[in-house]
Image (cartoon, rainbow, N blue to C red):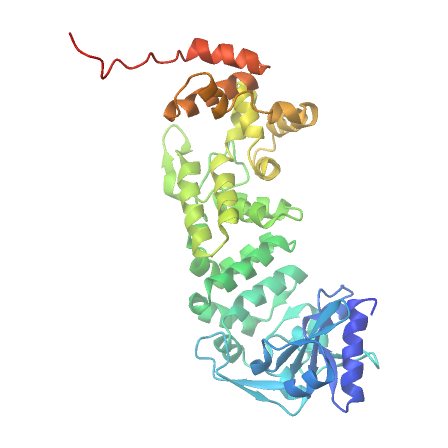
Length: 447
């Protein structure tokens, strides 16, 4: 099989040859009709999981109890699901019981939105539409299949998915569907934090993050999943630095200007000023004392709550904590500046700073200063090899202990400042600045 689509079509062909119905279903049909390349293909069939397993020698059956079998064919995998109807969603996410359905229409009617409820026959190239999804695709509307209250009560994550699809495709949410979200938004708290995180990450990285945040806000979902971000609204900023408006507007502008951000950059942008509401004070002008440190603590709490990985959390916290350091860059000593440039993920720090400037005063002089340094400074000057190690200090007669860190830091700073270039010069520097302690007189016989 040369492509994923051809592989999925072959799965349909084999199911049909065995006497079963089979169609592409869900997001892949939506994307095909929109002229987009689907990331994966799902097949719906009236074949039971056991029948699918018999037809295909290589399968993964981890979802078989929900009627789902993963078929492995060539270099690809295709999810094959038996027509089903779901019953009883006590946890607001997973059905308590799954019954296999007899028809494709019955299967479609238990799905979430009309634009995801379309079937496609790849052998005849015909679309089957039992729910009006084709018209909603043409009109740019996100609408639940059937009663929105029932659909969201069954699976509360669908409320976030409605927002994500509306933002991603530039669609509007049908009024009844949106009213149901506003009424039921508090229920999103029942959904696992990992699921919420995954939907939020998609919203922030799929290209229309600003629209997603605006919809989260007016739907009431933002206050439930990210109350710290919701509190940015109405928090004024000094107009001489932020002519664009309050903290919320500033953050939305940054989200709007992002271009294919990484997960950590996108979350860092969202949370970079999260400490401002808590530190707002009016003195000679509006001030946010220590808001980066306060914000770093808050950002860590948010990332932990949403179950981001430790490396992701550490990067986001660093982005929040250090985002104001660029204003001091031209005045930094060479050693401090080079340490700054050598921070892990510095490209993300620099991009956040660029977005921060563009969404406020528009002055990119510090950004250009740093960018020029990165382009002209040899990499060896930013991260030069160590002139001395702990073993070298022991060889010189120093005893291991806390002093080692002080000595090695002093050597590194002098090296970055251009004062030291060789190991020999570093040894002379250490012996002059840190005289070795004399041998202890303790234990000697007293006169």
